[in-house]
Image 1 (cartoon, rainbow, N blue to C red):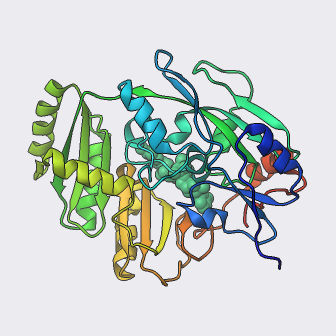
Image 2: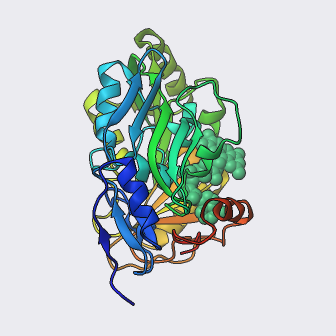
Length: 357
Ligand SMILES: Cc1cc2nc3c(=O)[nH]c(=O)nc-3n(C[C@H](O)[C@H](O)[C@H](O)COP(=O)(O)OP(=O)(O)OC[C@H]3O[C@@H](n4cnc5c(N)ncnc54)[C@H](O)[C@@H]3O)c2cc1C
């Protein structure tokens, strides 16, 4: 096998189109923060997306933003913050340098997905270079766009297998005035599952509800007007033992969640689709392997971190390996029927890697 080629990084969409047209096998690479997703056979040349960068349209009054796919999330987050807006799904690895395109391709959302939905619920448009080097416009730049199939959502978690995303549009929200994080005592996995299920079904409309596998606690975040948070916090603390975290501790906690800094450096990282009822089994799995784990979105998403050199083993839940060696799909074989039909429509000749590569 010939070694993987690195193509010259395109700086414009036209350069990207020309590059795709002239390369029979290729895969886009963002900032490399989820390297397993782009670890494919060496026959696929790698195209770095980092020069195709910049916000192309930001309409604060319309609550929409459009940026080139290689734009670092930190630029988008900073531009939105200046106008008191944000991406409520709490994108991951912002400080680590993750790009907008890579985040969409990985289908990664942070703890904020609990209240308003995941990345998939905020993407409204994509310009995609497909396997025939056509520049397709899918969706649009406005929130009220009901025409056609909602193809942008298909690109969430597509790992570059359908084409190279060139530009993406998102709807955004006003940032809440204040937040509070409660640390609720949960000595064992059963207590964690009970709090996750009950708190997410209660009337509090939590902003985030996560739990660390190795710590006897569940973390509940509230967001909204300052005056509303105090009574809500009191209400929750009447139901479970716990305390309001200091702003400093809360900020450290959520940054460690969104930057995945709780995970091993240099080890494998696997995203696992859970249900709240599966949390005790996931916790037991993590603990018996001497691994680290995090449970997010009220028990609907798990993250498994393995120390360097530990192999990713087959899991009983649907799972995707983001970093480290091991199968891309670490769980039961995905049912790809619809995905294969979309792949055939966009990339019949297989210019981009296959869904199981
Ligand atoms: C608040 C909330 C409540 C939910 N309630 C329920 C519920 O009651 N019942 C329920 O069944 N689900 C529920 N879900 C969804 C379930 O937990 C999802 O499977 C999980 O959150 C991942 O969803 P996603 O694909 O949208 O997320 P993403 O973060 O986009 O996806 C997780 C990743 O897993 C990968 N993946 C998806 N499917 C497979 C697969 N088959 N094999 C391997 N990898 C795969 C994807 O590529 C994706 O990258 C809920 C989710 C949330 C946020």
